[in-house]
Length: 91
Image (cartoon, rainbow, N blue to C red; front, top):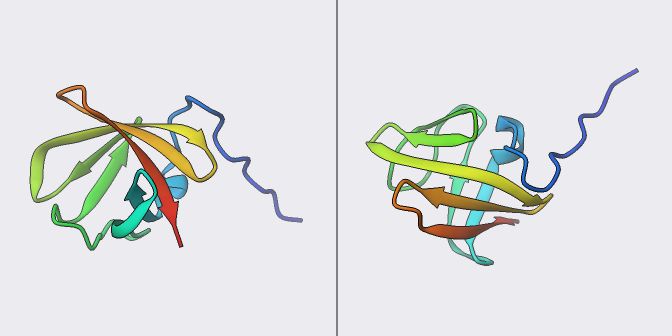
């Protein structure tokens, strides 16, 4: 028997598994970043890591992105400067 993990609830910190996939800004998937399960990405900031609600990037160590769940296909990201962006899961 396999157990299935429930999706994080609204305003929760996502799991790393939730973050894996392609994410666009405000529904725009043209420049989506692909966060891969092995910690690599196709984005401009190189490999990524995740800890306690914060995404970090190897090539931009000063960039810390705080993320919270909106629903199973959307999350809000907030950088250290306080700018918030809605991130949408892309196909």
